[in-house]
Length: 161
Image (cartoon, rainbow, N blue to C red):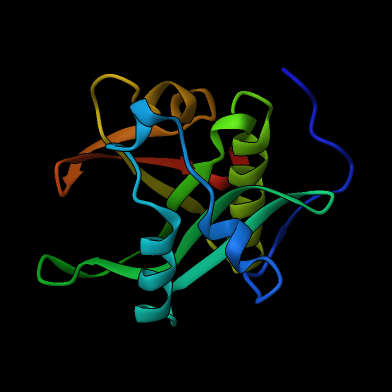
């Protein structure tokens, strides 16, 4: 695994990086597991009050995309006080996987959530071939026993990251 450079950072999506972010693609065997970045950006636009989209940059190169969700009522009909934040989408370019970029992005998202006063971060994943489950489990996420749109829901205490 290559160590990401010291110039690794998350950056807002801007006119200068939009094309590179939209051009990101995961491996073909992962395409059924994560939506394309362009759909994420549309969702960010539609849910502007709760979406936090960012490009993952190593120097000037876009190597991935991450989007957090901030303070969403999980199931308002069941418990309107169950407000959650976490990782909505993570796309690492096929050419840049297994180099630490995903771990960096999750750590940066949880740091942002911590700055906002959040104590837990949530994520969901599809199970089956190519699932990101081992990656998220290695970061300390644990299944809650819930499902969301057929995906496993998991949580981690942010203080543990």
